[in-house]
Image 1 (cartoon, rainbow, N blue to C red):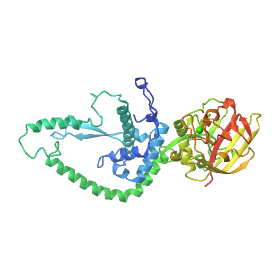
Image 2: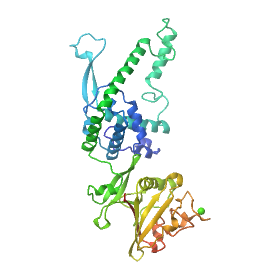
Image 3: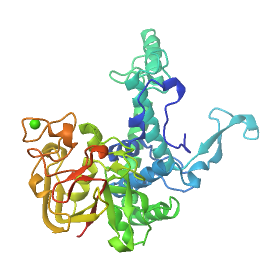
Image 4: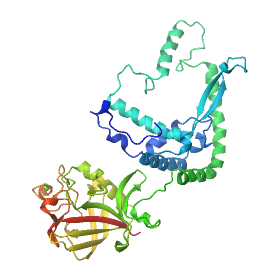
Length: 418
Ligand SMILES: [Ca+2]
């Protein structure tokens, strides 16, 4: 499990949709896993106890680390190392007899959190897809050992004449056990106070783990790669903290570099007549033709000031460009409304007509026309209908009214100015 490289549809589940299993790990999943981590337990190789991970800073770092590991399909080597400890069996008397010991393996707590996320995700998926039969009780939510113990305990209580052993609302706990639990809570409080003091040191330690072990740092967009002088190519970017996406970064000196490509057409290998959900989440291949995804374009352009550059090759192979100093795509509730302005370039302004328009796709007609603009001009921020349509069928030519109605190639890219 720990050295996983994403989930795939194995033959047994071939009929099921496994795409959600490979979604980036969400912050909520991390929080749930961190909350469930037991305190006052032994640490693994990295000596990081669960207590120090139960704060917002650590959650943020775990969020980044786990996503990095999930994306890379690798985990830090320390996570694959266990410390084997021998525990003397309670009730035994002879400490010299090896048979009176049992072995336990101590592993890194952050790795347990990562496993918990993957395990919960698989469990939820299996329950939702009903891939387990009802008799499979082991390790399943609401079908735990406790269920069996509870039944067992009830049967004993039925025949039990000693009052006070079986408490109301706590059928499976004795007074002694409840007292023990209360003491554990009080002990945890004192540990928590110590943890708050340690917080600064822990933050630094986890940053070190993130940079040193996972060998990665988080980048918002291709503009961030300018700092580290990266070459053009496909990179994983984190438009915001809710997830990552693969994008092609144009870092060529002649373009000034730092451009995140949001759309590219040139060989017709990818179909662009697609649905709302496909445009929302993106499609195609970042190495070839693709659409980054409206949700990612929104997250980026609403979090800073971005410029948009449209580069076109006409049917007669001349090159043109349109640069917009203002480019914002609204959220899903606004139906990814376009805000565009500040044109310059030599291809003419064929986007101004689409300013303040909602996005339309094959299954959502949000245009101002009585007809459905998407049918002939592809998904776009259609008005009535358009002055541009760069997502229409490549075989019929891409549409940029002021330059060429049958362009053979297009690239749309954005760059953060502030
Ligand atoms: Ca219409």
